[in-house]
Length: 523
Image (cartoon, rainbow, N blue to C red; front, side):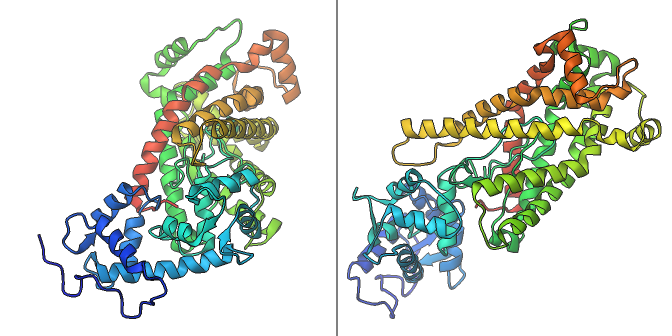
């Protein structure tokens, strides 16, 4: 065992320490003892990580790195007791300032109303029930208030710097309401279960995460109406673009992995009918017979290619629309977020929609029909004109409304029902519960909006099919209903559902690994 460095034992408080709290030295020494597992008078990053987990302190991801960076004044990669005490002294000073800012009536206690007022002052509107969940997570003596000691002990090793970060932390501990695990329209939007939180129903995310403290960007090749939102700190440090890159890479791998099912879905939407029955296995065999195994990935290249421009356009449009609605410093209420997100999504879809049409044409192409994306674009432009690149645009836009509304409503209902029935001491249902709620809600949203998605795809493709009638949106609806009935509007929905679980799983694994590779810290 190494000997403690000079000045690290017997433990002494910093010389400027005030005697106001006679138990402070004992409390700090006890905490240091719990962390210093090998009893060498020093605490390294591994001891910090293991100690925080052992003591059950919800300090957030990478907290041990933040604590060591702030407290290690001699930069030797470890904390002796003097450094540890200096760090805790500064932490308590900051926590006391935050406690006083929350304690609006200056009675030495924080009640549920003061938590609500703090959120409201930052433009975030939460219900009484949500404020009570926050209070219960800190209130250890059951008084329905938080005193200084409870506040201090809860946050002492959680390196949050100010009330904005405290509110951000609480937001994510409540879980992400508005979200989407699987969309239908636009076939290409990044799905973020991160920070779509917004008290009444969510930030989006900000999926920060479905884990409460992590960012989770899940892309299954479909759409989300509310784009991800980044804090000012993330924008200044450049963390936002790393998260977008990680999400784009996760989306690319996820879409590539499930491309055969996506191509089969498009094939069944366009070609399946009563007279041309097509099931999953038969459809896959037919595509392989016509073009070999590689043909299963037709259209995947442009589907991956459009991730970056759509995400960038949506992000920039959302920032501009948000400023127009509330100003650059304000946090949007959930209704305003929904409007801003929908407008940003519509803006991105409008700009990249020609790529959607090309994706459908390339997906349906026969061997040798097109040599690539550019060749496909030239031939469509020459034969059909510029308007061909916006066929199906109207049902695509209309489909966002029922999908987003039903998805959000079902998700919130399921999540809140679970919390009321099974959650005792936490407002975080956990990743599995949120994934289950998201899958069910997305399924409901898809069932409602799938007919519009099918009509959109047929409108995009009908000019390339010999003998196919060139119909409008309403004309197509009437044509399908008269010949195939209501079931005709749901051709291809089976492979669409089949790709959800593998897509989410692939996206999650790749995103987490990309975050580590890029050095992205969880919010």
